[in-house]
Amino acid sequence: MSAPERLAVFVSGGGTNLQAILDACRQPGYPAEVAVVACNVAGAFGMERARRAGVPVVLVPHRDFRSRAEHERAVLDALRPYGARTAVLAGYMRVLSPVLLDAFWDRERELPGVLNIHPADTRAYQGAHGYEFALGLVPGARRLSETRVTVHFVDRGVDTGPIIAQRRVPVLPDDDLERLRARGLAVEHELYPAVIRAYCEGRLSLAGGRVWWDGKPIELD
Ligand code: GAR
Image (cartoon, rainbow, N blue to C red):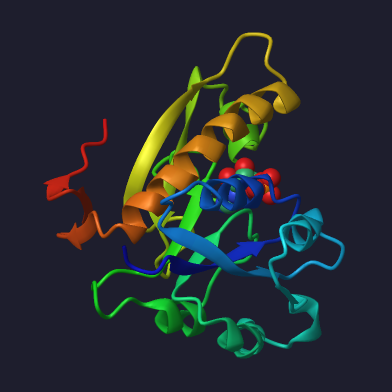
């Protein structure tokens, strides 16, 4: 068996997706390990989850830097000793610049080396309030009957990269933000480790702007 893929997981907040990934990595035969956690927000609980799992943490607050590029160069410098090849964004509330995206580009597989999870269909909503969008709580939105948790490769846009996988999450009549988020996060916690597994096993490819699983293009409805 080949060595596990070394992940850098990026967090800004509570880190429940990080926890799901840490838990998955403990399963025998899982093809990845969390080599390091990167965080941009002092006090974020995600860092505590990493420490409890014995994973090193790199805290680089973006507020200390004048530009996005400068911040990302500092993050890359701090990450270098850990040898991570893949960046997994797990509630990392920063738009990435080419500095970070290019550093993680996987030349061997010709794939972006940065993955993200998003609480909505990225074709319908981009931004930081996916569950609020599904509930009609952001300007111009109407309440939906479902949201679709999406895992995608990160490109230079905001939540515009090629979609790798989606799962439907129903929005129930008596849902408030807390209830919908809890139901959605439970789906996120299954989907993300499954996608990371497929990525690390080399089952994903990219052609014609679309992601292919095991040589077949994904179908989105
Ligand atoms: C998750 O719902 C994730 O999908 C979302 O932030 C939350 C992080 O929760 N990401 C985005 O909205 C990215 N646009 P967590 O810190 O508990 O994993």
